[in-house]
Amino acid sequence: MNICGIVCEYNPFHNGHLFHIEESKRRGVDAIICVMSGNFVQRGDFAIMHKLARAEAAVRCGADIVIELPLPWSISSAELFAYGAVSVLARLGVVRSLSFGAETDDVQALTQTAVLLKSEAVSAKISDEYATGISYATARENALRSICPELAEIIKSPNNILGVEYLKAISSLNSKIRPIAVTRSGAAHDSDFPAGNIASASALRELIHSGKDFAAFMPSQAFSIYNREHSLGAAPVFSETADKAMMSVLKRFSAKDFKKYNDVSEGLQFRLLEAVSRESSLPSVIAYCKTKRYAHARLRRIFLNAFLGCEGKFSRGRVPYARILAFNDTGRKIIKDAKKHASIPIITKPSAIKKESKKAQDLFALERRADDIYSLFMESPLAQGSTLTCSPIYVPENH
Image (cartoon, rainbow, N blue to C red; front, side):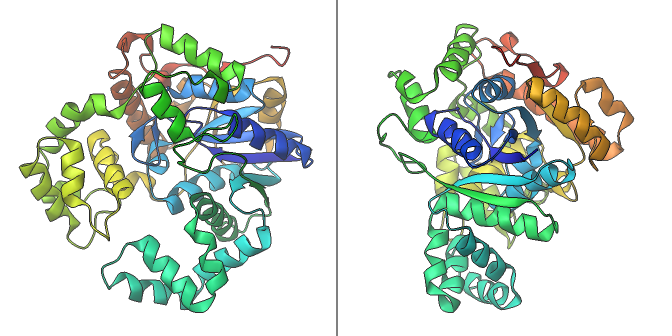
């Protein structure tokens, strides 16, 4: 059975995601396991809808299992995000391929880029470029261009960058997982404008935020779930509603406190502290800190990690468990088989975490606190409560 992994956020699930799943199946995939961000996402933001609802939407639209990518990896750099997700898929012991959307489906070129970026020559060149004060992304692009100009064009596109990171992770893990690159259909990543019936997730979130009609850009099953959650007061959730709460926490930080979080280096903690001391809103803090070196998304991730207490220590080492968020009948069979082969604990009931390592239990507790914080910013906070105490969503295949 060709079981395929997909790394995703589905924030929210849209027609482009449906195309990706269906195209993966057209390429010989028999079943799909998604590793999905939880209630907070890689760009340093709140997910627009809570993780169980997004996981249910994914299964109703063609996935067989959705596993949560824990918080420390969900709101990290592309490299750590990709490594955490791919490591979960690899350690399940049943995944044969990994499908990802990209601006190019040239797996050979993407693989060559990944190999070069892991080489000592390019790594040294990146360090030299980065020392000039530019961002890591620009340093990486410049370093690659100096050695292989045609491949430098590949890492200009966001989905290609993630694809390369997935390939780097597969190599680092010595995994035999086979990559499948699916060319993006319709609107480009983060595009403000739809193309046909496909809009980017960012454009879709903007439509939701502005109260405009967005039904045409989501599969009917996913749209129905969004409407259900909206009627319960559980969606949408926007990070801007947490601005004052976040600032009230950040105002208590010292430079030493900021140093505990990923991506805070080279004295950045002092700039963060100065900005938080001077400014009264998170957007103004980020604007104060932003430079060529420190990109907006990196700063958002730092402040979100700090707000949630997600210190860098949590993302060190392996992801300690695979928590199932949703599954169907095929997924149930795969979970049963995976438990015989996996080198990672598979959690289907929250109480099972008590049998796992202290690292796993500490991470589970962090996740629970973050989920409780997330629920506070719903229109009706009690509509969700702590998702960590909930069992996975089961979706019968005859739904």
